[in-house]
Length: 133
Image (tube, rainbow, N blue to C red; front, side, top):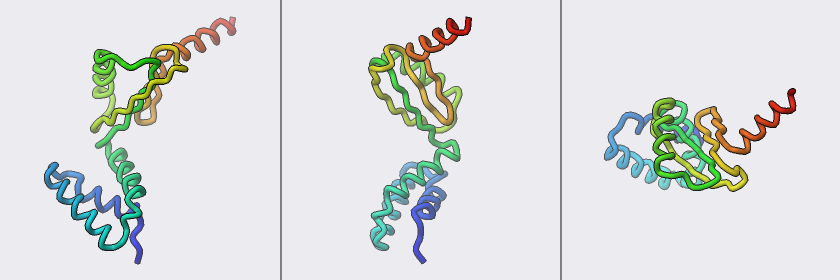
């Protein structure tokens, strides 16, 4: 019987879920050896994909992406991080991207939420309000 990437990911997740960092490292080493012995290393990308999903579902990891017109200042990052720590659970995985099309401000995506504080969005909202009248 062939084990699927999802089953491997589930087994790994359950093995590392409540373990200390040192134990996790050892478990992962053994897991990779197991995959190699069974000629299943080609499944590693799919396994990681499913594993990430398990961590997100359990609230242990919260992926966050933020797009801004310019690089965020340290102060801005700290304020956004405080907001996220208050409104999310799990370890925050931060991904930042500069997008010059935004003109100003930022767009924050986390969990199933989008917080659009971009200048472009504000101008669009303002334009809609003017056109209503």
